[in-house]
Image (cartoon, rainbow, N blue to C red; front, side, top):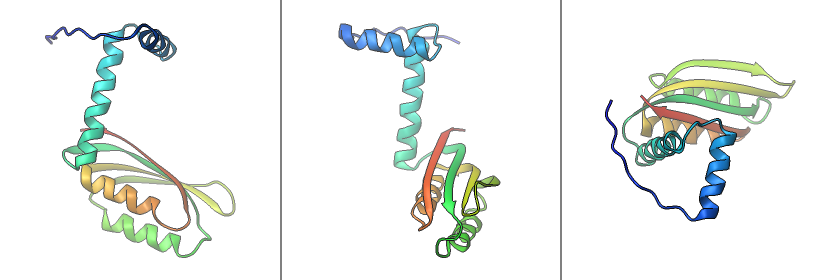
Length: 133
């Protein structure tokens, strides 16, 4: 694999902070850390504009006693059956549940599923982690 060399200028304080961050995260050099930041920005842009294929997880916590949350979640999952590869359900307490969905599909569809689930009354928190396919 060939690489292109580029130069980047940093203010000393910013560079010191960045060096500490990459040391704390276990990077062995600045280049790999910067490449990871660029990759992350590209995936985020792909998701923002709704293009490209993505894969990842959607994790959310909800109170299954609140309203019709179970029915609404099930309907959404069925509406997006082509994007959902796997689901896992954990009972956290008598009221609270955690679900993890492994998702794959067009960025716009996966984002729409995530936004719709997080908007359901009873869903307390949701987080999507994705990368491009």
